[in-house]
Structure formats: structure tokens, C-alpha cells
Image (cartoon, rainbow, N blue to C red):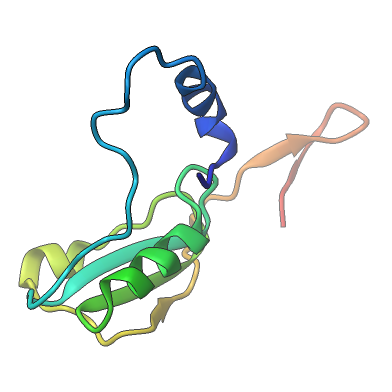
Length: 114
């Protein structure tokens, strides 16, 4: 079973499961569906990008991968509004906030992060 650091506790809780798992993992079986959009961030620790690629591979031709080249969960407003699926392999550049966070310098003053 693949895992991410936040999921380790959940995985460990299954180790002593006294009864059979009612929904065991298995390869996906997807056939003859409309395109399925899989949106993922390159640097999302909770839902790793390799999981997205593995899922797309299992789905096959119906899968469309939208890659956000940043951190955290991606936002897919355009798809939700227009219901138009992007071409497979589309990548979105990281969107940095317009107000950059600051950190305390050694002398106690604050400096902008790059």
C-alpha cells in the first residue's frame, strides 16, 4: 500500500484489524466513460503526484491529468464552470501569492521571503 506521511496513522490502525477489510484495494476497472479529470499538485504531501499518475495509468484512455506545478491542493475553477476537460498532460504554473510572507531575521526585524 502506498502512503503519504499524513496517512501513516491510518495505515497503522489497519495492522491489527480483527475482521476482513470490507473494501480491499484493487486495480481500477474503468471502461467506456466520458473523460475523467485528475487534478494534482506536484508538491502535495497529502495526495502525492505519483498516485495521480498511477490512477491515470489504471484508468487508461479516459484519464486526463491536469498538473499544478505548485504546492497544496489545486483549484480547477474553469473545469467546474465550463465542464470542458483540458487536453491530457496540461500543466499550470505555480501561482505565488501577491503578498509574500515575512520571516524574522536574526536581529528580530522582518524580511520578505524570496
